[in-house]
Every structure is written in C-alpha cells, then in structure tokens.
Image (cartoon, rainbow, N blue to C red; front, side, top):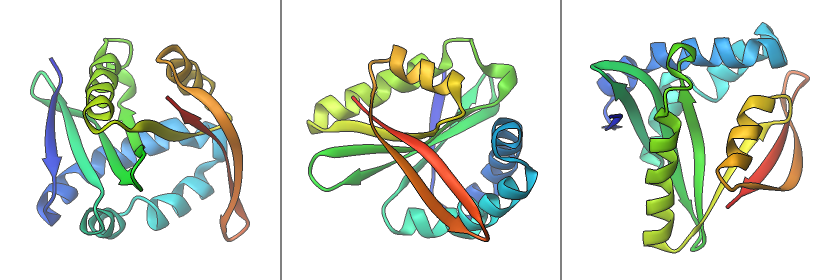
Length: 161
C-alpha cells in the first residue's frame, strides 16, 4: 500500500529533493536533454521554488512504499472547477507495481468530493505517461507551447478528466 505524507516544511522539502532530482533526470533527460533538465530543476523544481509553491497553496506529498520514498505528487485547486495535478512521479524501479493506480484513485476521490475536473500537463514526447493518463480516463484538450527562458521551450498537452 502506498502512503502519502504531506510535505510542508523546509526540512521535508530538503528530504524530498533528492527524489525529485533523480526522477526528473531519469524521465526528462531523454526527452529534452540534460541542459533543459538542469534549467528546469533550478527554475521549476528547486527547494526554494517548491517552498514558494507550498506557501502559495500547492499541496505536495511524498509517496512511500515499503518504507522507502519512491516518488511524489502535488496538486493545486484552480478557480472553482479544476483540481490541477502539477506533479505525479514515481521512481523507475517502482513503476508497473500498481502504485499509480492508488494515486489516481485518490485524485478521483478528491475531484468527486470537491466536484472538480482533474487537469494536468504532460510533455508531448512522454508517450508512456500519455498512455497511462488516457487509460485512466483523461483526454487531450489542447496543446501548449511555452518559452521558459534561455531558448528552452515546453511542448505539452493539457489533459482533463
């Protein structure tokens, strides 16, 4: 059974960060290259950025399985209709063990309780994640291409359920 623990303090963020960095390098380096991963870790997933996101209302959770921190997830409540899943990552060694199904069930329950649509973004090159999201009932509602600085671009799909 997967256990979620809220990440709120600087110490908890610091404990989570090695997992963040490991997963981002493993998942995104083949898609966007090491330079963009480095840039995004500094500007989008550094300890200080995560701390600011939490202070602004984002909810981060460490994901634990059999006593090990194996991933993390985060969500935000946007306006009155969206539960935005901003982060959803599991270490490679722990994929295909049904852990994502537990997280999706939790998000389904939250969305139903709050009567909100679920929304997330995914890199268009992340075919495995897209297939998982579509299997879980998400549909692509639009494409997004965003310049993020220093010549880097994020090319994503926005999915909803």
